[in-house]
Length: 585
Image (cartoon, rainbow, N blue to C red):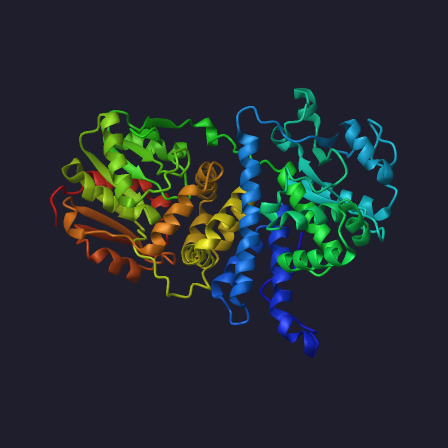
């Protein structure tokens, strides 16, 4: 689903409307934001959205940015609340009208709620037959969505009845048959295997349901929420005023306030947004998937009841290496790398920080508090001394742990370390750093953007984003092209963590925005560093400057390589760390 461009300028405005141009842009931004939230296949708008608000162009007043912030947080809060409800023990999904289709588009089954919903649009439903749409436009919309599923789309938002003037559109989601477990619907195992798609709609006509969309979520007063509810039920403004016992003038004033809050100017658009959010909140659960290859996590319980999740790979009796993973990846390691560690006699223990993967979130986490958690973790595993290793955003945590644990760390290693965040730099030509920098610079943006991303997470979306992020990184793009298995491993690592939670990414962005308090004089163990000569995420000179104050015992540059050196050369780097000198340089 395409949406209004959010980076462009308003055109065709009359002289009297020129002052409203930024607020017309607000309408486009909000439309794009909710389009992003409602369309499972759309992720590009999130990147364009963060780029726009991060630039804070002069044409965007502060009150406009505040409105954008509010809408982002509302959409994200809605997604978060609905996910929490669907994941809670014993939670039941809301009532739904549903039908299932085979690969030829013929009905396998449907419930009475769906029969009632589609009767005005497709007549009577019959098992074994194709849907018989009354209007050509509805047939085209449904068939286009069904074709998209065959091409690999996980889900499509379908809008029906939009061709009939004066009638309320009908909204539903067409999901790939593989996503049936997410719906919680009573399908048999045999039917689940046969179904190519399932179509979901609200079990009753669209209405403003405060269980799904509360006034607080929409930013409306109770009176405004009641008015929107009546309008969504199809009443005209005067009819809604009569039903609510208020004057038409009061209703007009309330509607004007609602339009201003939504950045809209048409009642139809308002209803459309409310309907899309209802579909989002009702039908997309964002349920996490199992780890790749069912590789189960292990856990250590901390004194305050929190748990640290980890996985072990390589030789069980080998040299213990404590590996701190980046915030956006989990602890999963592919079999081919684990086997290489086994041959090298390395016992790799990959730890997930609070809020990452399976580790309990700690809203007060700092790099120092996590270092103290690691002391308890090591005691629980009976580890007296270890080698410590991390890459990218895990670097400050490795350095803090080396400082806290003292002699219990024999050596520490960093690959492509991101120690300092240069907020003053313009990373507009680097999509990955632009997105990362936006989250660090704009505190109000972090939770909404990341929760919305997680809500619609899929390997397809992650793959598209990863390709986009490496557009400005020729060495990394070449590496992924030459080693397709590596690209799949990166997707596994990302999904392994982000499908479970994003609280750790949010917290670590907060910590990065304030700068890390690291004292090089407290790090007693030798430090060994590996850098990519063509790294665009942490450029070579920037990395050298950041690490210089820690006086590394050795520093190796992989010439012609990029940011992915840790993923591409993990066994080689760890072997060098294991056999490096234990004496400070």
